[in-house]
Amino acid sequence: MGLSEAQRKTSMATWMGYPLYYVSLTTLIIQNSVLILILHYSRAMPLVGGHRYLPSTAVFLCELLKLTICTTLALYDMSRTMTPSTPATSLFGSLVAAVFTGDSWKLAIPASLYVLQNTLQYIAISNLDTATFQVTYQFKILPTAIFSIILLRRRITPRQWAALLLLMIGVAVVQKPAADTASIPTLKDPHIGFHFPWSMVGFRGIDTPASAPLSKRSATYEGIQEDDALEYPTIDKSMGVVAALMGCVVSSLASVYFERILKDAINPVSLWVRNVQLSFYSMFPALFIGVFYMDGEKIARNGFFAGYNWTVWSTLFLQALGGMVVSLCVKHADNISKSFAMSISILISICASVIFLDFKVTTNFVLGAVIVSSATVLYSRAERRPRPAPIKIYDYEKITIDPKSAIERSTPIKNHTAPLRSVGKSSSRPSSPARHQSRLGSSKGYSESRDRDEYFICG
Image (cartoon, rainbow, N blue to C red):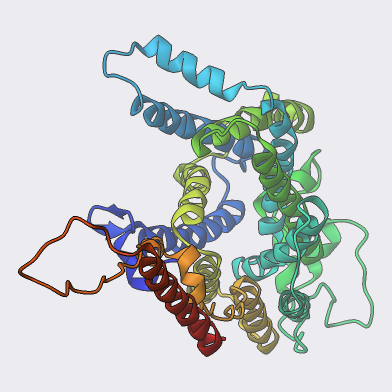
């Protein structure tokens, strides 16, 4: 039987006098909202030194920051169980032995999936606005439920299936384009019926807002298409939606597989050690596949830190801290509270996008956001179980259940003998044994009859 609400609040851990329940949820709301805004701005901001940072380098540096932070926290957690005189070499040796255990290699699979998910996240946020990205990314609840059924043998209730159906409807409504397309810039020349230039020079004669960036630079040098794409990044909403949905599937598979590893583990390992293992194995695909294989030529030509400034570094630190915030929420909050926190984060992202990023709120977006938020809360709501029927204990059953009652029932009944007929005279002759047995049998019969009466009354 669970604790009451008052007992749960009194037993909460605190940080600087504030309950960690509220601290973790508030931090999750702020971190998630600010991260999405800064991440989107970092992909659309003006070039830094003529270059834009590469997502592969950002993913690798983020994993390196996570490894540093989690290693520090794991060492601190282990030091609390050791004596102050323990040397640092023994402390590091204990951490290495805990990280590289027999089943640590299994974390290479979810670690690689998390690297792929982070790369897809950069592609999605580069082609979608922050509000649409936030709402679309809630779609990961559906693949999480499916993978939980397959890998964890988890049962999904009918109410949760209804929530998943609402979730799909909400995401589809958000992606539905608005009916008004008059504000979309066009390359069509308003002075003639049909015109399609065959080169970049031909766009100079078209006086439309969409053709203005195309006629600023000459097309006589090699690589102008790449330079124009860097300075004026084009937004492909279809690519952004596909990348976001693929990121949801990959992230769900990684999280469910990670949970399966935790449940199948023979030796219990702390949460910080698990995070160290994930970060360590994530660095290999991020370095060799992302940095060397995909962007090795660009990095060799422009440098590893090309396009970095304080905005990019802030994004990396917020991403690295996001894992710890989620760990705190898992430990000190429940699913319903996290769902409400994500809904509030979506609302903050919408308001910030309208104020700072000129986001146009449509009816479809508002309706879809409400449906997605409601489905998220409905899916995470705890299932109400019927209370069991009260246990009825009869008096004759208390002899075997209540020890005190059993002791009282086992006390022998005292037989009261008849008083002496003569007080002044005494005799050494014993009393008649026949009369004593008759009294004992009489009292015993009374006791048995009383128990039978109680049985019939209670039954």
